[in-house]
Each structure stands twice: as structure tokens, then as C-alpha cells.
Length: 531
Image (cartoon, rainbow, N blue to C red; front, side):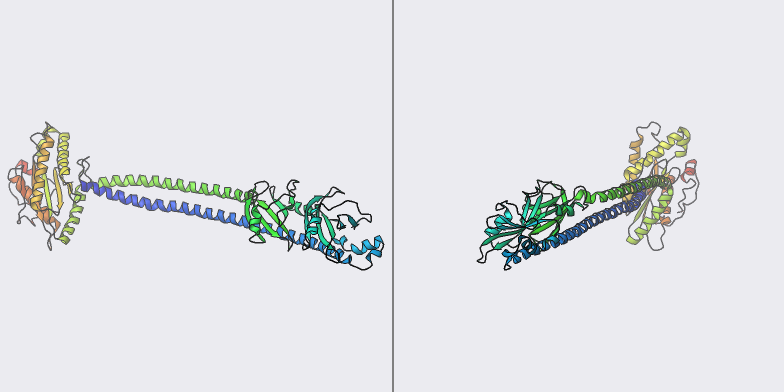
């Protein structure tokens, strides 16, 4: 369908406006979904942090409890060892009976939990006194680390040994020892308190940390004294290269995340030194176990979020479909309201609205506005002779010639009435408007040469007017001037172009005069020059 650029622009502007409106409606829906997703994500992230914080808090509480219990028992044992060292210096001790001597030396040892016995070992490694047995074993213990450390170093106080298996009971023990010295300061042996490893196991195994949780007791030199779950190969191993001791160098207590040194499971570790003893308690919780409840919650919230977002998208798509239908209906109404269905040019309603607008704009800018009033010569005779379809093709050919020569976006070609057309040319002089009218006539001739039916009937009468709006002037003056010129072209023989004169400006209707049959068609009903 043929259309002038101005008519096409008239339809595109509402389409662009609808698109912007559609975006204004769609954007909040998308933004709402994004905001909702962001809020849910933030809630899940905060939940993860809270879960980790609670796990660290629980582990810290456990570490504090274990530290306090171990420190209390080790301190009690240490006091017992110191009491034995001091009692050995009592005068006349060697004159007491073995039973009385044992009672004097080891009177505090019974208060220590899980203590097997307390031994006094001489400088050769031989057991001389046993708190639990009046006849001590003849075992030589000079190869034990708790003996050698005091023999080789007189500045060591309380020493905590590695875990070792007793040669008497085959049970796992941890030794606590202090040095004995002769009056001259030379090495006289050690006093040893051996504590069952079961003490640590009983304290560790009751702690619920999940299937992959661990509790470890290690010396500050990295030697593992006890680990739960118990693994025999882990007891006595070294953690000196583990992340624990990197953290321990910076603070005596704290927390960190790292793969386990023995099994590679990633855990949250909370550690703390036991009082001022060379012992560290470490509680490890598997991150998978910690976040398992959080993951269940996250999946539930995530599924809900996906459902809600999907519903939002479906609603947005439904809204988009409805808006698309409305847009199609509005565009169809715009076409019906502004475009002539047969020719594709603007209709008279749109022409009148555009003329009023361009007239006001030209008045502000003091620029001319030109108007072409075009009428097909002898159209009624042609239509009656060749039929309505041939008449429609002729009108379409005229519209095509107009559309082909109306180049500027501000120009407007319109069907003014039955066989009458109008071309509005803002900011155009009379001469330029006349040249355009000539091109329209030439283009119509070329367009109709290929049509045998229309040959010899492609004649136009055109009236041309151009006015600069002045004070008190109306746009109907321009229409009247162009209409006057059009009637003059018909009176002068048709198939010609007539330019409006100054006298034509302001005329509201052509002068009355005799009319021929052809003249009767020149002013059909509905094409009055009155605007």
C-alpha cells in the first residue's frame, strides 16, 4: 500500500510510544524479580554465615570445656609430682618402713583421675618406688623420652611425654614427669605419673560433632597425643606442618578452615592452648556436616524462589501478549483514523490536523507554507466508462506519484475527497511548490503509460498556493487560495497548473459562474475550500 513519509511517521510515532510504554511496564517486573532474587540470595548468605558462626561458637565452647578439664587434672597431677619431689628431701625418710615411706611420698596421688601409678626412677633408669606396689618392677626405663629429656636438660619443668604402651599392662599411657636432683645439682632420676590414654578418649568420644568431626590433643611441638575418632596410626604422628601451627604462631587460640592433615576432609577448626601447658586442643567440624541443614533450607528457599520467579515471568509474558494484542489493535485503529484505505495517503482528518499544526509553526517562524490542491480531470466520465476498479487504479496511480515526490518528513500527501488530493509543503516557496506539482504530473504520465485503460486519461488540474502566516491569518486562507487556483485551472481547460495570486488569499469559495458537465465534477461534495 502506498504511503507518504509523513503518514508513515504518523503511525510510527504511536508505535514507538507504545514500545516505550511496554518497556516501562516490563522493566519493573524484571526489576522486581531481580530484587526478589537478590533479597533471597542475601538471606541465604546471611543464613550461611549464621550457621558457620553457630558452629564456631559450639566448637569454641567445647574447646574451652576440654581445656579447663585437662588443665585441672594435669595441674592436680603436677602438684602431686611436686609433692613427691619435696617429700624425698625430708630427713629420715630412708629410715621409715616401706609402707610408711610409700604413704608419705604418694599421699596426694589418689586424687588424680585415670592415674595408673607414680614411679620414682633413679639416674640409671631403674624403678626404685611405685605408688601402687610395694615391690616395684625391675624394668629399666632409661630409653623413654620422659627419662632422657630430664637427664640431658636440667631446666625442664613438667614434661609431657608421647603416648606409649606400658610394658607391664600393655595399655596406652601418657607420662608426666619432673626431674630429681642430688644436693650438688646432678641428675638423680625422675618422678613419673602415668595417666591412662582412656582419660582423653572418655572426654572426647562423648562430643557430638557429626560423622566427620574430630577432636585432637597435641603437644606444641606437633606430636599427637590423642585423636577422636581414634586411629592408632594417628597417635604419635606429627602435625608440625599443618595449618594449625601457622595459626598457633599468631595466636594461642582461634579458628580457621583447612583440609584435615590426616584425612583431607575440609573442616572448620577451633583450637586453644591448655592453660600454660605445652598442649593444644583442636576441635574440627566438617564443613559438609555444618552446612547440611543450611543446604536443605537453601534448596527449599531456592525452589520457592524459582517458582515465584517463574510465575513472575509467566505473568510478564502474559502481560506482554496482552500488550502486543492491544498494540496491534491500536495500530489498526491509527491506520483507520489517519490513513486512506484505498490510496495509502493520509486521510482528510489527519490532513486538517497536520495543516493546523504546521500553520502555527510557520506563524512562529515567519516561514511560508505551500499547498497543492490536485483534482483528477474527467474522473467521473472515466469511472463510468471503465468501471470502478479502473477508477480505483487511477486514484492509486495518482497517490503513488504524490508519494514518490513528497520527500521530506514534514511534507504530507493526503486524499482530500473522492478524486481530489492535497499536498502540504511546510517552509516551501510558491516556485518550489509549482516545480513539485510539475513533477507529480510527469510522474503520473510515466506511471500510466503501461496501463492501456488509463492512457490518455492521466490528466491533473493543480492549484498551488504559498502563504506566510500573518497576524489574524487562518489556515483556511491557504486552503481557499489553493482551491481558487484549482478552479481557475479547470476553467482554463484542465490538465494544467495554476498559481494562486495575492487576490486569491483570503477567498473562502470560488466565484460562481456557468458550469459544464466537467465543471460539475470539479467541486464535489465534501471538497469545499472552506477549512
